[in-house]
Image 1 (cartoon, rainbow, N blue to C red):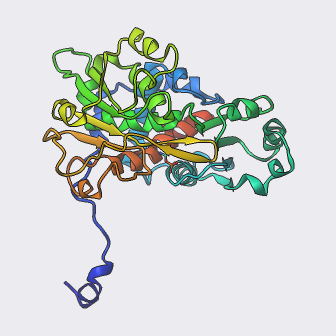
Image 2: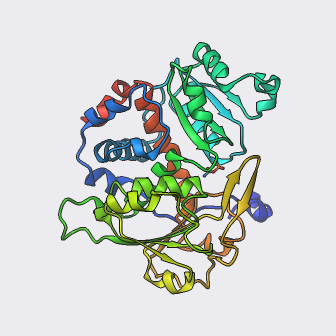
Image 3: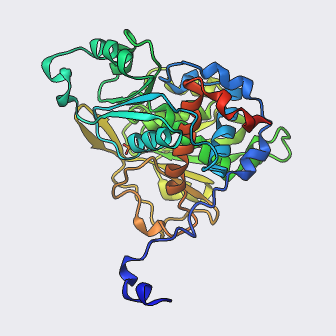
Length: 359
Ligand code: CP
């Protein structure tokens, strides 16, 4: 070790050598390329996980894997385009990963992080704000506390908008990032051969009708029911209060086998993927759920189980799991940048600039 390093031990960079060995190569190999499907995303609004079909998702994951495998290769697909990044509710990952994705693709950004600095503070409607956004940018990413916000803005928008979280409703690009992580971890799940595909058991510690991340993830999982032996919803709410009317039935009709448990430690040793979330945004604040559920090194996880979390975390996810192979939540957050790069490239009609991806 040289002098500089010896004197600065406590300031040395953390090198992530244990968590999430999520190299995208396996995923690239397991999806046959067909960029035609991605043209369906051109100029589309992204509001809900409901909008996606299997072929589009697979090609989106493939493009994300291509970006992730070679991050230096595509620096200009969004050159000349402007993103309006409007976050009227706090965010670390979603805002910064969308902005990072846009920067990495060569575009420019206008960012609003406080609605009180805009005309909304004077009573301006989101529809009128949207009408103005048409003049200033090529794409909008909106996070807002109200479920109706994205649709209110869509009334006047002629440029595409992405729902980056609207109250209790949905967070579709988080679900895209979640699924991208799972398929990087187990690309064999996408095998056409039933013999090669070993379906997984997934636990979701959360409340499907209170958490937008869980709602969007379940819808996304329902597009790949053959990959899941069972989804176990783990919660400590009373009765059936965890579902909206028709929510469970819709998932079951799509082919998901869903069971419910209130005993996390009993369920954990049976699970291959454990997804945990504890908060739900309500109005201008958040509520916590599942106070009795804490994942830490002592939790009875399967040896090769992975843990996912949309983050931000609270007490439910101990930092003592960070340096274990169970930690795929950091990889999940990192992969979201590449997934969002893929989505933005398609929505902003710049797929032709990465067409050599398909050769
Ligand atoms: N996952 C997620 O939505 O995180 P942020 O709230 O930090 O954007």
